[in-house]
Amino acid sequence: MANLLLISVAALDTRVAFLEDGRLAEFYVEGRERNGPVGNIYKGRVVKLLPGMAAAFVEVGLERPAYLFAEDVSAQEDEFYQVWLKGDESEAPAARRLPPATIGDLLHEGQDLMVQVLRGPTPNKGARLTTHVSLAGHYLVYMPTLPQSGVSRRITDDAERQRLKAVLEELKPKEGGLIARTASLGQSPEKLGRERDLLLKKWALILRKNKKAPCPGLVHQELEVARRVVRELYSPEVDRVLVDDPAAFEAIADYLGALSPFEKYRVELYSEPESMFSHYGLEIDWARLLSPRVWLKSGGYLLIDPTEALTAIDVNTGKFVGRNHLEETIFKTNLEAAKEIARQLRLRNIGGLIVIDFIDQEQAAHRDQIYQTFLQALSRDRAKTTVLPISPLGLVEMTRQRLRDSLAQTVTAGCEACAGQGIVLTPRTVASDLARQLTAEAKEFQGCRLHLEAHPQVTEILEKEGAKLLRRLQQEHQVEVTLSPRPQFARDHYVITHELAGQ
View 1 (cartoon, one colour):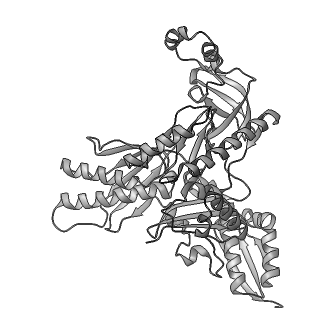
View 2 (cartoon, rainbow, N blue to C red):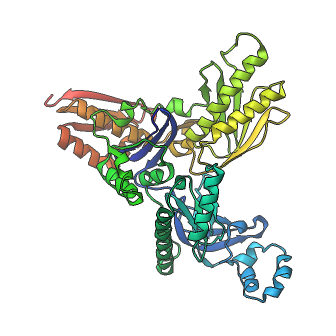
View 3 (cartoon, one colour):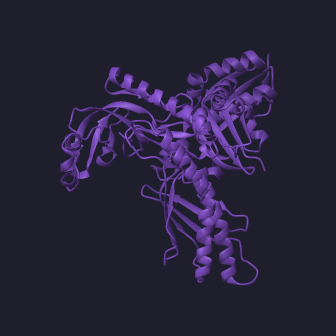
């Protein structure tokens, strides 16, 4: 089945769905008024050193100071080793025996430096920074402060890896290194060279901006979600890219056209009356998408329990009772669970430490097959994963790279009614859902009056940030929308009624 990349741009957010073999594999939501800070480059100022944590707090203009570990400080900021680098080469062996530099050797309070957000802020801590800036293109990643070059681990063909390594050696700039991304598979040196030149120009522009920028201040903004997702997910394996917004369609077509004149023809503008996600059977059921319980086709199920320290996943046989032997029943459940867990990690964008409790298997051959099945299922994941074999206790310990906030962190908030023990959809997410529903109903009930009753936090967002949408619905479909706040409603509860105009 086809691999589709669906990009839906609405009044309050952008939603992206990646269908792999016809099934939802990845899903992203991002508000239109803000991009997450991950990937942004700032001119920051060191406000406090934490020697005991080998880190520093750096003010970059976010809600709270971000933190920078000593290991993430480049040699450009390392005054201790800069002195050594400028010295006599005969001293090099002795210098290598020097103890690792402390955070005080690397930085001092009040120092200005250029940093990139490596990991976004969480409710309990600020963003994580690095001075090892990386600039991602479609085929290459340029790392101005690191000399190493490499090839994506997802390119497994040895001959192709050697070819790309040779190409990178030819293309390597005077300063920094290059990484060949998965999309570079089979690409010509000329095409890779053109992108290298674009990345070098971008870096030169960033350096000029950094000199003039106030401190703290934003120096470089990461791409908006639509083009960023195309940059990350678009590959020869993607058959079609469908976009339901003309402006986003033009931006994406121009972006792909710059890579190759033929690539832009794989982008299509979706203009049918039915919403694009509905057309492809992807109306988002938040309760199911975020539910801790995930049912397997066999009748077994997973329990996904995210905590601050790690995410625990438990596998259970559930309704599946098998036909012959207990060991066979458990084995089939575990095999199915291994594939579904890999899918759920991508779909929910779960990162960090993950512990999986498969059902105990007595036979070592079965345990090994489950492990290999899990590794194979993870091979499509663009996030870096490290997986240990099944332990004597029947547990699989793994880590998954945090590319972005998890889906739950993006669209949910702590429940006020239960002191944070549960989660509910944010008012913005509910308002975004309603904006889409009002658009659909305006198309269906043209010339009518739509009356929406919802929680005050939701109606306030629609009144302020959805005013342009409401005016457009009135102009294009002669639909008048009235909003009534209902404090007694649950945040995700609403009522829409229809009236003929003039009544």
